Length: 141
Image 1 (spheres, rainbow, N blue to C red):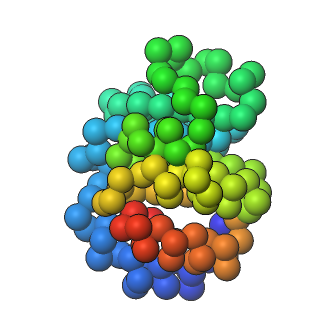
Image 2: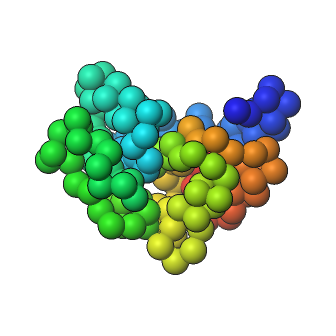
């Protein structure tokens, strides 16, 4: 969980970018990680009338209670090319880094101006580093 100091820092660095974009204007939302947090987010978005355009989890057994017509791409990059907003809900910092970076990561596929929202269990320093990397490719965090 991000503390107040970290949140203030992130908003001071990236807050002005958020004003231009919101989930209300997003056409396509993708979710990576369908455990307790990710599946609840997906259900609440669907219940609230948002379009969930893609779902991804390494475990094919999860998310079976979500609509079967939502595409399930094979890689984070593939999911991110399908979406305006990518939400991650992953269990540990190594998982977040693996999903975001590399040639098959979210940062390689999400369009400039896209949004990454992280609900994962992570650490402060890694969050700052990944937010900086996202900013270099004009992805809002």
